[in-house]
Length: 319
Image 1 (tube, rainbow, N blue to C red):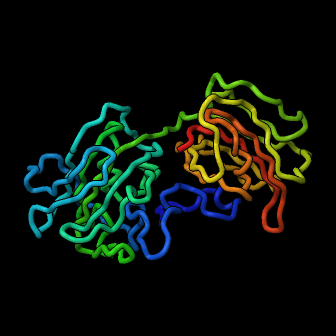
Image 2: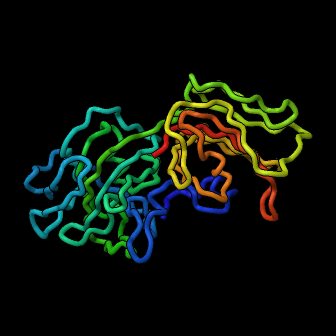
Image 3: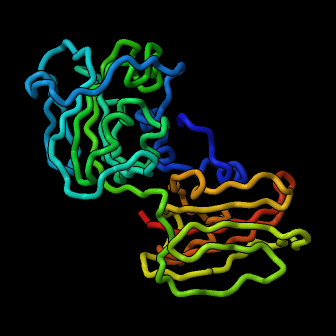
């Protein structure tokens, strides 16, 4: 469902662990469609306008955090993109590259609701302003304050283009409308707590982590380092936040390195933290019981399909 490819961590884990909001659905219910790419990338000719009179726009019931219901002023949808702030928050400004946490409801103009996060009971997370979501979200949500509820009316070129999104019941000529509640965001500078309690030191002849707690971490594997033969972890710094439980969604920054000398990967370098799902049987189970704000080093032994690898991970938040 994503516009972007799987991250290297999801690849080495052999499962789709990246941004949640994708894993909550089952059966025939459409997945979160703001992050579903069109079959072909739409040619964008529109921009969102905040000057369209309110009487020409759908109205939404409820306050921030409530599941809204939309009422449409006419069967004829707007030809241009529209942004209308329903209530303004007083939180930090959302910046391009943030991992944005939001609740939302999407509906075809005058038609059916094709997706909403409220019924799933938890907001969804996604990079914003980076081309991961539909263009209307990138245009409309960057620059707003957290705590804001906004209505977006998106013609096809700001949504899914001439191909629409058949899986969600969206035609190529449909205007789609979203109500979005901006819950939280996490930027490139998110990290473990600077005042986390320092933990154990890593063996001098093994993989090394550099970077102070509270700042970006880097990970290197020295030549001749012994590969791990069992999964294990070392808490390099213990934070004071909520402890991670099995099944939790967590926001993390991380770096990974492989013993086969394949190119590593760092979310700090990439600029956006990620939301992962912690589950038993995964290397991420090493995070269970560890408080948010902590920095954790993880050893993962080789399998028939993967070389041994290591990771350093900052638990930014437990959701």
